[in-house]
Length: 165
Image (cartoon, rainbow, N blue to C red; front, side, top):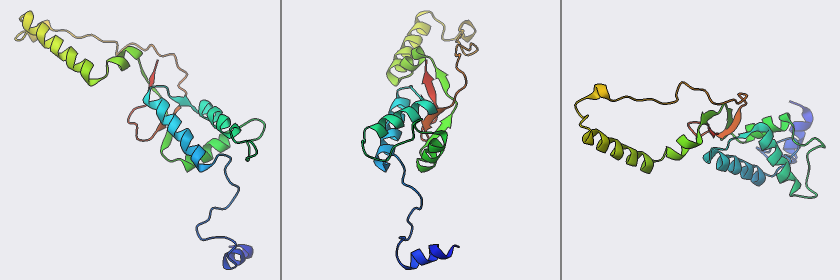
């Protein structure tokens, strides 16, 4: 351990548990705001890419004139890696495409109505004891997503990273 580090500690220049190094450009409150926005967008199926999140970080930094700022090119990948370490509640994942139609139909009330209609149709057409006459078809085998496979930022508590298209 460097002698000056011990000297600073003994003289009380450095508090116990204090973080060393330069302060971050965004305040902790600003970083929490960015995480909250990432979560807000994810809840609505609009997942942000890293470059979009970095763009929002730059916008937030510009809201504080006179504060420490990013360099001319804005936040870098290095800044992003530090942000990820400071905010363990977010992670990068590949998005699972979810069609808008399926997203709209994926709520409890819509499913309940569908099952009531299905039951009524089966009873009306006397198909209750004839399962061989019931067929199912969906688009599971069709790939309609032309995304580049770019990873997106998602809160860790989300089980799936659905990206509505």
